Image 1 (cartoon, rainbow, N blue to C red):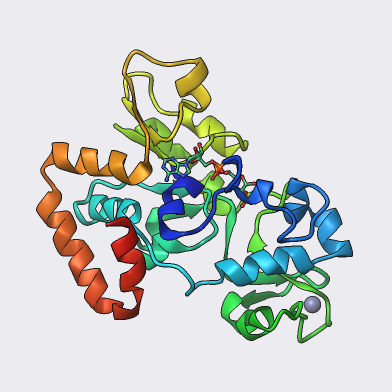
Image 2: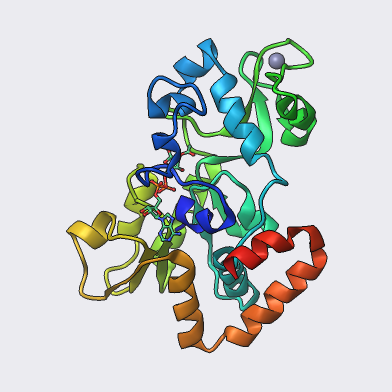
Length: 263
Ligand code: OAD
Ligand code: ZN
């Protein structure tokens, strides 16, 4: 289970960290209260703040970091049953984790839906509009087109419910970079069998790690990248990580700067 804390090393602010989190930096988005940015009622009156965020997060601006590549390595080794992420930055896909291994629980910019006629479009169709600070419009009915990001009160994507049965079959749960404050995602941490170790890698104790620890829970507190590095060292996967990251760097020479930040 992953959240915004796996992407802060790539330069994307999280939501709830006081000071740097998006919800402490409302002026930039011109919204009256934090959650307005993901509220339909507000969006229909003023979609601009959401599209300011969309412009920032549209695929292409950021590169995955060490934490994403660790999850990719788990997949390469056949150890990743599923990656449940709350992130809408798409960096798991960019890191090479195949879509069938991913549940993007809070949606994605990869697709978009007309708020009036409900037609679906590829997110790419609206890149130009979003980059030009234009609110994208449906080419059929001229309604506002909203990227398929889950707003408060909206139903989660079908895949969330389809794969929820993974949890009772898992034999290890990693919880990385999330405050576990948003339901129903947060409750999934309780859905693994009680004999299954749960490993938290995060700045602070969150969710059941704070209020209902199990005897076999493990918390690696502090910086996410440092925590993941420690796990990689314990597993003796250092060399494989370096090779993976080196190969990715060669594929994306322009992304070097971000890789160097966090590797
Ligand atoms: P939060 O901002 O609520 O939590 C991020 C967690 O990661 C916090 O516990 C931070 O302390 C921790 N963290 C951040 N950077 C870190 C670092 N470099 N090292 C260690 N820990 C770090 O983000 P989420 O839990 O992902 O909804 O938030 C859940 C949902 O709330 C989001 O998906 C979003 C928002 O409303 C949508 O986007 C629809
Ligand atoms: Zn339409």
